[in-house]
Length: 186
Image 1 (spheres, one colour):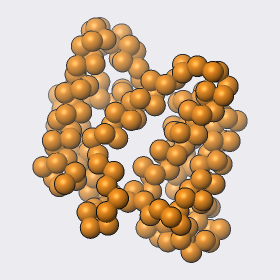
Image 2 (cartoon, one colour; image 1 turned 90 degrees about the vertical axis):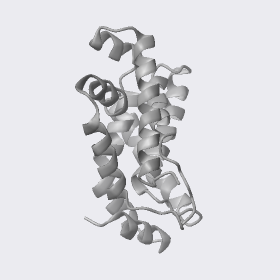
Image 3 (cartoon, one colour; image 1 turned 30 degrees about the vertical axis):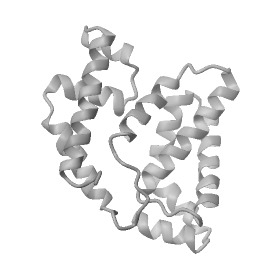
Image 4 (cartoon, helix red, strand yellow; image 1 turned 180 degrees about the horizontal axis):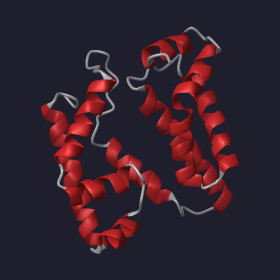
């Protein structure tokens, strides 16, 4: 399996292999995001294909620092557009909001001077989650990994939705500070 920078180089070289390597590495995670939002396999597959096309078209003008975040944001946007088209409503918008909330904790700088290793970011995120007490860890993981709504988390934890909202806001603030201390948002 190729590293992200090698896959990005394939996109920049306009090699068709870029799509197949992206599919090998990110298919399951992209489909997981799509299925959480759409609850439909065929729509999820369609959004995945649209994601690959969008990545192909955007890559010459953009060089993402994190290929996974780049792809996840694209598929999330395609899924939300598809959901709005299919339902005319935002019944799963809460899942997208949770992803947006977490993205705010990690600056999306585009300068090449401030690049850092994705593995270091993953390590820092894991360290942050491991530092949480079990209750906060459960809430954090339910919101940002399983994409549960605040209401669903409140029900599972037998607390109010307002309590969950407050805990999540504090956790995001703590995460941002944690990452700032490690130089990720400089």
